[in-house]
Image 1 (cartoon, one colour):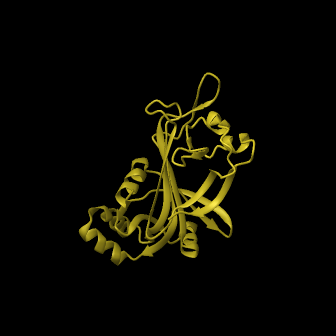
Image 2 (cartoon, rainbow, N blue to C red):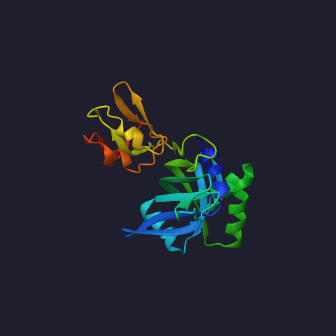
Image 3 (spheres, rainbow, N blue to C red):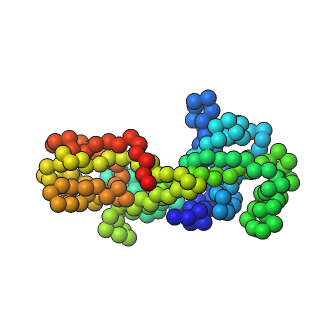
Length: 227
């Protein structure tokens, strides 16, 4: 996925959750992305807000949202039910851009005019660029209404960032008993020779394979940087 595609996914949602850290304590608020270009994704805040202070202090932000609905319905058994849709998240580094740079961008890209007009109306407004990030689109269809499996994950990164892998993996200790395959409701496991393998694009990291494996061949990966 390229930056325009990533922005498009976020823009369809509109209001997004932006997370920062303040003295070790997570903080969130609702905001939106208003523009993009080859350098990254752009959003605004006021220099008088804690959000601004946290962005300047850490240089980090994480953004997420859900489409098309955030409400939860329930089936006849009381189990949660979601219409097919997706969530998207991006985490990375931000930098503040000056009003002068914002106007230069607006001269060649109409999207940035909103930021210019908003800053002219509210002088304490400023703009940040998420210029280096990794993330993921989590496309779900839990009832398999539109395809024969529940989930498709698509990772992305830009600005020389790499995607960290976190999840579960079947190791060489696999004996090929097939219990994980039988258990996996996400259809994320397949056989490769004499052992089983997890398709991480379909894996929800629910832990069923980890719990059911009789020989402990499924390992939890905390973080591994992918090339």
